[in-house]
Amino acid sequence: MADISIWDLSRVKKDLIIANKQCSQLKLLQSAKWTAELAFSLDIAVDLQPLLNVEEDENFIEEYDKFTLASCYMDLKEYDRAAFFLQECTSSKAFFLHMYSRYLSDEKRKVDNASDSIGPPDKAENENLRTLRVELSKRHANQALDGYCLYLYGVVLKKLDLLKDALEIFVEAVNKEPLHWGAWMELGLLISDKDMLMSINLPDHWTKQFFLAHIYLELQLNEESLKIYQSLVDNGFAKSTYIVSQIAVVYHNIRDADQAVTVFSELQKLDPCRLESMDIYSNLLYVKVMRADLADLAHRCCSIDKYKVETCCVIGNYYSLRSQHEKAVLYFKRALKLNPHYLAAWTLIGHEFMEMKNTLAAIQAYRQAIEVNRRDYRAWYGLGQTYELLKMPYYCLYYYRQAQQLRPNDSRMVVALGESYEKLERLQEAKKCFWKAHSIGDAEGMALIKLAKLHEKLGEDSRAAMRYTEYLNEANRQGEIDVFLLERKNPINFHISVQGLSWFIPAAEAKPWRKPLKERQAYAVRKETWQPKPIPVPVWKSVLQSNILDKPTSKQQNSDTKFSLDPHGRLVEHEETGSDFSSDEENRQPKSLSKLTLQVL
Image 1 (tube, helix red, strand yellow):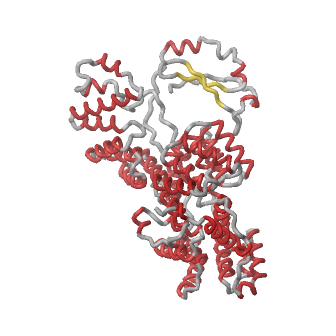
Image 2: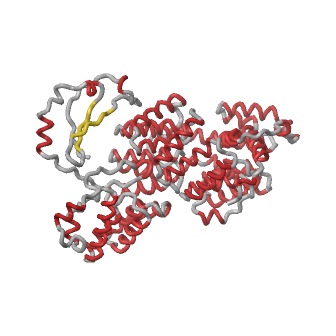
């Protein structure tokens, strides 16, 4: 990694200002925003006068009126009008804006004509892209394309699924114009692994470090990414909201949910109206079942801009947490209508279709997510789960293997792969998977018990007893199993008898009194088959004989109340909020309690 501490930050800020001006002129708004945010985060004074008075070529000066008119039309999203008035222009800036307006016009037309159904786009609608490719390829052959036009050429090739050619063009674009962040981002989407990254000839420019941090994060190399981002924070970029949000995503990827929530909270203090990455923040709040915080986040996002894709995903997550899956699907579809290439919405809507038992729609959504980004392990994993429900083990084996390759150190992917091998009676491969999951840190605590059952199935009683003992020792250290009960049941052959050990281990799961953690959206955790315990008769009688239905308390007058049992059989009350995006008990209308719900936690 390059030494960031030796950077000339005044030079970096000057580069950012120049790049911001160029991207703003060419209507590359996301790149312009990125450069502006980084420039703002650097508390360094620079002389702006020579930077703003940049000399232009004579052709651009002659065509300035047309360029300005077309820019106004672009701002108003009148792309065809912009392309019409620029068709005779010859300067590089005017030519780029002409081609870019034609590209955006075609994309807008596709979105407007798209149906509301979930499915792949019509490949026959690429005639305009092929025309653009022919025109750009002719100028490329004559070496008449600058860095920005090369970027557009690469985007067109990528849209036409000419990925190898697109990769070469994007590499050429970042070497010619290293300050254009959009070209770096498109290049990152085509890099599949670290070996491929190391084989690419990248420019020796300070933007390369930002790109490496970004691509490491995309490739799930979270430690390397965090190291670069932390070095950037320590060397002048501490106020950058972009870097802070990326650090939060790193903690999200390594499953440090508490730290990720803390960093997102700090990000909201730095930029209260920021919507970027708020969908990831809502995933974390969903996982931690922080309903009040998720409701507050949905309120704020909706007040800022209710027609942003991030807002739609936040609201969709909120309704999903309330188990209102039809409403969640409605908002995820709205996000996809606003941006058909929005990866998070495709994955999340697939999860919702799974909840609604609509496996066909879930498969289509997950496949579309993979079309947007083949590195999305959650989509691969979701397909594996779907085909597992459809009793198609060979299919789910393939998709679980793809997910495990993207997350090689994620025990959940390895356990899923092992279960697929077990269903196919490939028990030796299954044993290897379960042992690897235990070795890299079993997140769910299921690998050892599954490995012990495999040993028992294969007649390897001594090894099975060893794994059962190891599991019980670990569970006892974590306070999850009362070993005294087990010893009382079979005190003689506790450490050597498979039957004595398996008496306490339930056949369905390793943690019998716990429901599976609702973690599918942020981490795609597998849900084991869970069977509720029968409720003891004395508990039923004590509840039915009570006057809890006849005399509601003041606390119950303002909220619905659910009752459940803890692991020790004690009755527990749970409050349910009833209004959309609301966690304020005082503002709610009284509701009558119509029935009593009993469930075992």
